[in-house]
Length: 189
Length: 144
Image (cartoon, rainbow over all chains, first blue to last red):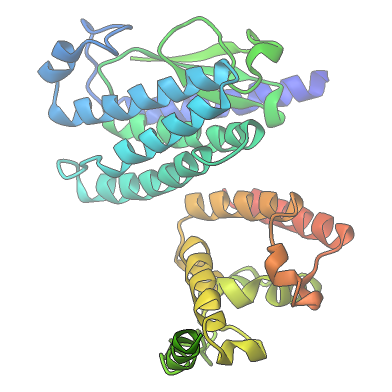
């Protein structure tokens, strides 16, 4: 058990480093903090691309909440909704390299979101794991006006991360079974 | 009744596009990954009819509407996963595909029952499933 936890921490450290490097290049808005999720005005003030990334994040967070609440059918609905917003993401203002990378990540994320739209809850959670990785990589490129927290559960599938708009741990991989398992491993913005 | 017969005879003349190719491209799953022959054999027999550019058709593909039914399955299968085009996928996509393949095989969802019902040789035993899943996991770990 302790070796597993150690390995998990090591993985967490590695992924932190990786993420920080990428983020250094994205502009950080200091005024806009936490809970701007529903604040349309704040979003409109930012770059339009940011607003698009926020639209994806918003759907992702709703999906995460459905999984936290063990709500299989709501998660299906929200998975399909996320797939739609991913498909309508406009990457045209990014550099060619970023566009290529975004296209690849979004294609991947869309597939996971679509699978979530038609699966049982265990399967939804499996896909949510990779989806969360994809979302993290998208945000590393686009940046965001929101403050998000990368959280980590050492128990699920050898250690698994997810993103949340709130600092408080609500575990989407276990739901009510182990609601508060996990920790904040990184604050983004 | 006569109408039904006319329709049934009529649709026999509607052509379908057979999913067949003599070429195995460099991007094929087996070539890209240098897959060991035992795994290769299992995957080619059990998956390639619907997930590659080359289907070994059964006799009833000569008859409509069976041919349409097969065609739609093959098109759907290839759109989700085409082993012949494996090498064109990014590492991220490969990892996701491997994860899905592994889970479909492990959970007994693939190969589909409607397929193994006819293609008995495509049926995977429990051992086969475990063996392939293990290989796919290793393959996935080898991708950064």
